[in-house]
Image (cartoon, rainbow, N blue to C red):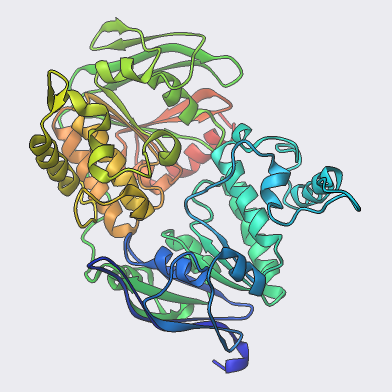
Length: 502
């Protein structure tokens, strides 16, 4: 690697939070026109290293070189100023502002001679970007961000990062909410950026993406750089071993739980314009998978079932008894819990600590006469967090300080503490590393063995086939098919059904 081709280099970078060493003497580099994948388990330090490069965090020691020169990046504005932009794993749009205002925030042009923003130019420039990424039929510049779904917000963040014409772009789990079509569009963009000599840091837990895109792959483990390899010189099992420090035994856990009676039955569930005539049932000890493309209506059905959204018609039965759910508290009362794909909006209070998040909807378990038993709360919350393997110093850690995967585990801990009889998992392993995924799979089987009925929505076909006893396929707001076999032919049939070929 010649010094002329190296656009970014970190030398002996270290970072600690209190007594927790997050990065230890990390050396990392990116070349112009290169996709350098950065991998590691949740909490390995990937996002922390990138936030130091962006100036969001200050490194305790070591230095950063950009285009061969030492730089002192004191914030995101400094990073953008020298040519570094980042797509964050945790999306943070300003929901009450428009798409155009979000894309060009801080770069708005004013009408000449006035203090007023040139909104017409802002919208024109945004429209061009939307057309370039084939989003003009779904999104307009004047739409507010709160009108967009997660996948659309993710694409807007990608468009925003690329629009800075940066020399280096950091992509932290950029496809976590994207459909296959949107992912292909991103890959084409990455190929174009490479040809323009832009360096790209690509953080992902999806092996197929890394092997499709990366020129080099670096692995962090427990804050230490384990190694850097050329893509063609390494195999998937070697990377996994580097990430977790051991060979992973197995992957998907076979659900050998005895299947009991029907716990939950949904009949003719409808929300006009979103989903229609949804009927299904799930038994005690069963893992029922929901397949479908982004926008098929899977998450929307579960949001309505749990009482987050209204539905127009349909009936819900719990153990044969008809129940009415108009609010999430009704679902909780009936022992139905949802681990949402959107943990920031529906799962967590990011500014509070782990204990408060886990106990938030379970306060009645620790209180008598409106007084909380703090010792009991601490003990119980610590036990459940250890059970789901949250990586933390203690449950006093603020949730926003955790990695995305560990935040997901906190949501799971909160739901399990409510002792559900029906557990809905919407993209349960989104943003979770391979080691932690295996742990989640084992936990799902353990819960099924306790008689819990589990509904799992997943965009990862191998995960659905590997973990589900049955798979229902949705397309266009309707259930289009049901599958019970587990083989490659079924994967193709599921995909055809999801695409609309019944």
